[in-house]
Length: 122
Image (cartoon, rainbow, N blue to C red; front, side, top):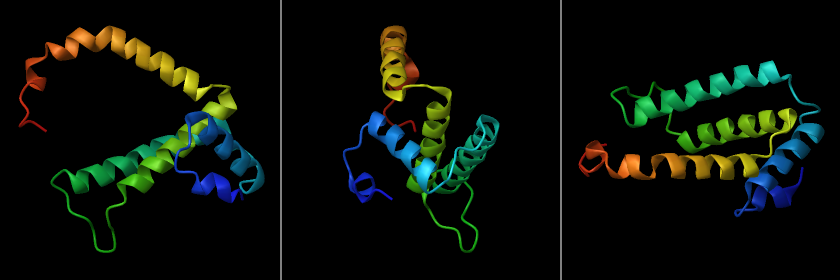
């Protein structure tokens, strides 16, 4: 495995995509099918939801469980990048385009939303 990839704390989306690709092709042998990766994405989303329900909601952790939201979010990012790789999506380009869309569409909408003005709301 590429230790420099693991130790890089300033990784870009492009570098993360490349790291996931290299890892899958060496350590992981090959990509799972897109449909399998979609199922894994759904599974990981559920694991993030479980963490959120226990950390911020009314549920408590079961014996032996602990908070690991960061790890679950990283799993979600990993499979998202794997899907992007196998579907030919440049996530840097997609993210930048998405940010421009959200900024254009939502700039005034959120500023005028009274619900967002109450700083005591979660």
